[in-house]
Amino acid sequence: MKPIWIVDDDESIRWVLEKALARENLATKSFANARDAIAALEFDTPQVLVSDIRMPGASGLELLQTVKGRFPGLPVIIITAFSDLDSAVAAFQGGAFEYLAKPFDIDKAVALIRRALDESLREASVESGPSETPEILGQAAAMQEVFRAIGRLSQSNVTVLITGESGTGKELVARALHKHSPRAQQPFIALNTAAIPKDLLESELFGHERGAFTGAQTSRRGRFEQAENGTLFLDEIGDMPFDLQTRLLRVLSDGHFYRVGGHQPLKANVRVITATHQNLEQRVRDGLFREDLYHRLNVIRLRLPSLRERREDIPILVRHFLVQSARQLGVEAKRMSEATLQFLTGLDLPGNVRQLENLCNWITVMAPGQTVEIKDLPPELSQGQDGAAPPAVAAAHEGGAAAPHASGGVVFDAVSGNGAPPGWLGLLELQAAAMLAGGQQEVMAVLGRQFESALIKTALRHTHGRKNDAAVRLGIGRNTITRKIAELGIAGAKDD
Image 1 (cartoon, helix red, strand yellow):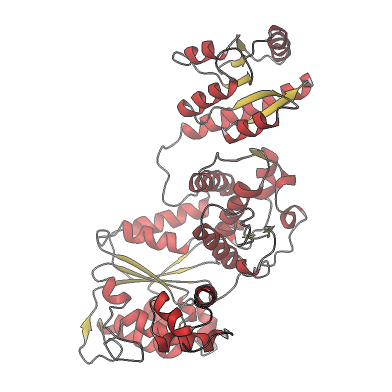
Image 2: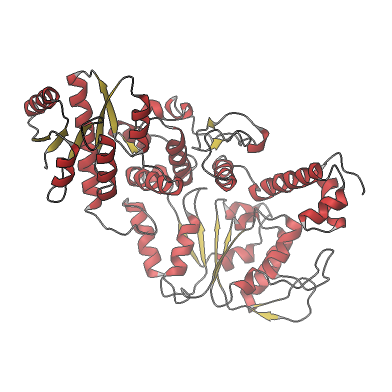
């Protein structure tokens, strides 16, 4: 193990820390200024670096910036005065592990350095592993079986039915099946059949000809045509309307289909992979799903385990999602204490991997400090779970402060932007994630209506209620805006 570096122009502080750490059998190396420490980094690195913030010459913040630029995973503890709030904030923004406020208790200082040391050793063990993140993370025996199945199916074009609870990663597995198949260089097209309104789903799947229905001003290719020679992934196949199941069965049977309003049969060379969280056998018994289609889809069944069946994977998933979330938001990645990881490992997470990912997004935005303790988790988690899915999350634009949910999602105030990552797309992604983890159905339809309503209302305000003028500004037809105003129940519109 490498020594702990202490950088401080105050000789008494260096001496006290050296003696305290020596009693813990921890090696140290001291520097009287930041420039000497920066020069030493050319030849060696510490396990942990402890630095004063105000020193003659280069400051501790400059040292922090240099260290983080060269060794992002190296924990740096900054020593600062109680009154030096700006410096403490700057230290965290620069990626400091934690800061020590003067005057500090030596026992607390040693405990903090111990925590940083544990984190440094854990980071080193992670970095010594594979440098490239795999497509799907999992070391549990149940996941190894999934990996073996993907390997066995890698050179096959056979139809696969993926089953498992919501949030277990069914689309990830579908993408892996495509990536390792002979069709890997061809398109992978995904469609959630539960997210498309029934009257639009047929057109989404098979396309339509010009004039096939009101608003069809041009011909459009459907997902089958888009996926030609590649893979079409149909998620939530159990929710497909019964009449459309007949059309899908025909495509799977003879490889031909018609666009909506078309008379020329089209040939489909597509591998179909489907997924569902529902019990298809029960839906067949209930008369909600065609038995012949079920047998056509159920050639190879691949069941994904819930997170409760692979608890040993939770620590590696948490670390991966925290790094991923931090990279997306452009901040330093948070760290989980061992106690917090053990706590999470013992929870029943009904939203599975998706819920865990949403929780890590929440932690990245909302948790104080760089090391996350149990008390920093959303209250719904720390107060225990009843195993039920969390309630559907209210729409973001309806207001309200940022609120954590057991799903790990966050409700954001879209007006003030409290807790929000940069940009409205970040808000949209987090809202969608929270709704999906909360078990809400038809998320795309719900958010789509809210999106259209917000656009039209804003345009009407801009044009003082003149709907024809608003339609021109939005780039849609007069009949379209009239229909949508009626459908969405928007008040205050008037003819120009």
